[in-house]
Amino acid sequence: MVTGAATHGIWHATAHPRSHPALHGDHRADVVVVGAGITGLTTALLLARTGVDVVVVEALRVASGVTGRTTAKVTSQHTLLYSQIASKHSEDTARVYAEANQAAVEQVAELVDAGDIDCAFERRPAYTYTRDASYLSKVNNEAELCRRLGLPASFTTDTDGDLPFDVVAAVRFDNQAQLQPVAYCDGLARMLVAADGRIFEQTRVTGVTGGAPLKVTTERGSIAADAVVLATHIPFLDRGMFFAKVEPSASHGIAVETDGRVPHGMYITAESPSRSVRSFRHDGRSYLIVVGESHRTGEGNAAEHERALIDWASRHWRGTRIAHTWMAQDYTPQDSVPYIGRLTRRSGPIYVATGFQKWGLSNGTAAALLLSDLAVGQDHPWASVFDANRLTPAASTKAFVEHNVTAAAHLVGDSFQGTPLSEIDALQPGDGTVVRVGAKQYAVSKGDDGRITVLSATCTHLGCVVSFNTAERSWDCPCHGSRFAADGTVLHGPAVNPLERQSLPGP
Image (tube, rainbow, N blue to C red; front, side):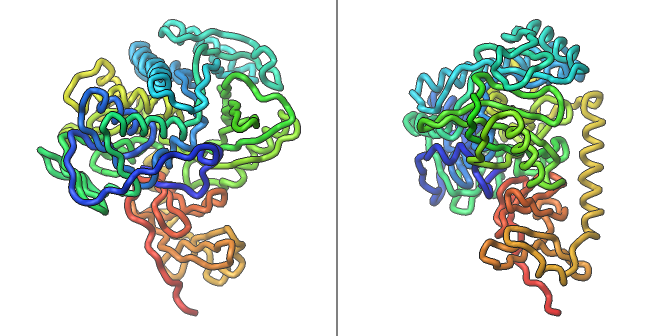
């Protein structure tokens, strides 16, 4: 669940979505969708188009979360993921994943056309490329597999001069797309309201209870519904244990102006560290978008990762000037396929979608195509592959153990760490640290005005110790990816409650 962020980046700077009222009182709907990003809005719109009475509830504003921080590629080209899925599962599973994501590309195109959405939607080729000769066979194998799966893929050894450097090999997908994601979501919201759907912003959902009907509780009122869709990036209801089945990962983004030529196509590296590249034009200015430097949320130095992206762009494009920087977060499923379906086998009609592994515009739209059927009791041919309660021990056990051992290590090990109280005076404006006084830990940050804010350093989800993110000025949990603003406000779930305000003990 995402409810805001310290920085927003280029997409929020170049789009201004319409506002929607907050919820007041008690309401009734056929389906409640929690979350107004691409998954939630698309699900709601597809339902409303068939006459379903649908309500969307958003903790902050439309596209305020991960959708507004993506690279904004709408593509079924997902690096070398098809080979990974075929290896872990089967080629048939990879074929369903391919079908779902290619269908998502065309669904986005149809909605842009139907709603006349002004969102810089453009058809472009998408490439997964390598500059490392040891990846040549992997890239070639991916291209061959993708062709067998029915995707518009081809193998190539050049990019027709579109990049300022040579590549060893690439998989090219034709007729993919890019867009302005905040403007696109604003268009979806407009279409939803026109179809008699309702959107409530600035309304945090705090629980879902009951049976028939379900009761969605918020800080401002409640909604009774026959079905509920949790389109909050990661479910805030823990009973599905998804926090243990997906690994939180942060990536960094920059938008730069450059004296060099920006690429026409969309690009991403096959190898690590990842570099995802595209262009964007707004108000007569051309921007180069670069996203990458993935790392586990709450670990490492975010500012250093951001600097690495800036340095990489500066090495390859002349005269780069930084316009925007931001951070995004996503979750990686342990068997490489997103979890889309019922929250639990016994939860009743409560549905989730999570684990998009950085391909949220296509996977989120594919999830909407699936969820809009499931929410009204209809079967779907993709349901078994994406089943949120599937058991795939051969494909997921290693990643499950690694993720949860890391989380446990943070839970135990970080509880003994902390800066001495005497070092608070050395904090610079915009910085923060965990301070230990006796057995208690405090999250202490200094604002630009020199004021000190003191919070509990204990994540309100499951009790891990947060760490300070210097790039975003946020407190991030390395266990399951919850993030909090410097004032303790929840930025990203699975946490629902803010970090508590505290006072440091006297000398």
